[in-house]
Length: 227
Ligand code: DC
Image (cartoon, rainbow, N blue to C red):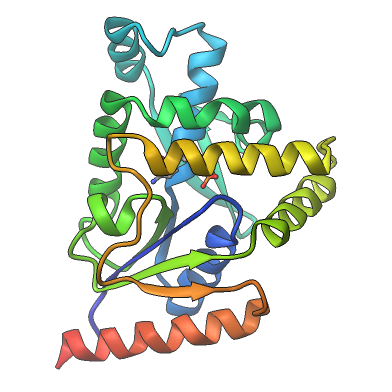
């Protein structure tokens, strides 16, 4: 059976990573959370006071950043220069700062290169904003996930509550709106649907139904590439 590449893109907090993880598990594929990489770079910039508009400082910082993923107890953990930062990068102050950092062309260039290396053998599900358009334009299956803003806000709020991260519904909504705006309007690889992506609005789909839908699509594409 062939190992295909699956790209899942979409707006903030519409359940991309849940779907991508479920699908990777069902297919026994590797899952890569590209957003975690932008979050890790953002954490490094904040901790080291890197000014995003100081190009030489940005390049120096990028050379000093090593991002890796490790699976522990069935969960993916993000490591920044050897330190487990999985919990820290999910916090609101990172969400508030990540989109401007992700809009810096040299940051994108460095991370896209690493993402391509991670996916060079196929058998991968990667989620993000530009996976089907820029990172893997030849991916055999591209999904563009969307959901109503209020539903996304509620989901994100509940996720933060579950992680005991203090938040406020109105602030969460504002953050989603701002990130969607910056992510969709930046000049370098903005979030947009790839022409050949399958659009799924999961506002009224449960986790199992969503997985069934994409699993069938994936199996269909796998059969097509083996034929
Ligand atoms: O998926 P996420 O919310 O963890 O992503 C965090 C931010 O990183 C998001 O606001 C936009 C950016 N991002 C990006 O620009 N390109 C990607 N492939 C993934 C994330």
